Length: 503
Image 1 (cartoon, rainbow, N blue to C red):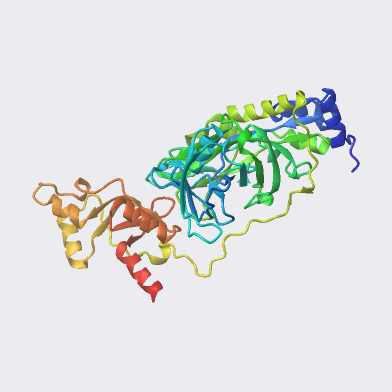
Image 2 (cartoon, rainbow, N blue to C red):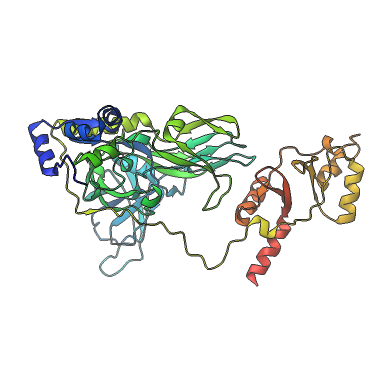
């Protein structure tokens, strides 16, 4: 089909030079396309600016410190006690955003080092080496700022996902993830991304975005230099590799952060200008939050393919409440919509003032690439594969004496308490009964633990073992999504499994 609008990048750049380019943000474009249609919008608008500001863990920086006298070939290097990678050359190092401080753990990491560099703060550099004839020095201990080093280049393997899943937690305990803190029993939902402002959602066919595209990155001009790792455009999960001069960046758009009990990251502002070359591009830049869908995913099940509860729109997420099983659940975003708008508006201002010109990409990003999981030779066992299925249970009204006889006769230590529909309501251990002796209590409901740590049938055994260690318990019931008891898994079961694996 022949397009009615056909505009070149050179024409748009000429309009930028003259100060005649018509620039709007992606949020503004939604209303323009809705009111006038894509053809009229394409005739009137030259550039749409996008923006996002959120945690981008797959980020880091290349640094070159210059040669010391006598020279050193850094074998290991630490920046403010955060180890960087040095296996490339004598005095080059790559500091990853998620690398943790050996001194402060989760409180400080690579993302914070990068922010401190941008802020002009002194960074303590400590390095060791094995020493060679041409690099005799074996250690060095110095302080540097960004002005003292040769290059400081933000170089990120994976940024600006087209969209992110929304996360919730079906378990009965709080979990700590890269999607933030997830409360028990679907207590909250977290999400990320900027919806209609999302850079890649405004050009999902990569008609204008590709290798060599000039972008807004951390408060300065940067570039896309490849598709991002785990690029999955067929699932609307495309992303990009980005690069830019760290020395010119601004901490309004670049901040180190800590995800509680998960690790460190780098919050980054990123925006891509979309040239309106034709009405097809105008249409995609008119995408609204109602049009952008994502999956509400259960992070309570720590698997690669987590259960999807439902599909939700970014309009619903931004509203702040999502219905789960007939209950309104609060939603919070890990991204800053205010900062995302700031990126889009700052980029718009740069273009209008003639400070930012569009670049022609040398190659479009792939649109058909499929993200493959890790190749594993051995299957990972799940709770259902190891648990004891024939579980002896009791009811809340059964007597403590009855439970004591069961423990003595059957030789086990964990007695799940279920109601008439086989739904788990509590658990009693042999230790609970020992403590209860002499208290005058008669029923199991008087001594049972009601808030039970459980596992799901489709959970990896590794995750269950970690929970046993976390809560310092020796066994837990296995339930289905409705809370019905399906089995029990103990530390002895896991020990026997490990014995089989080793043999």
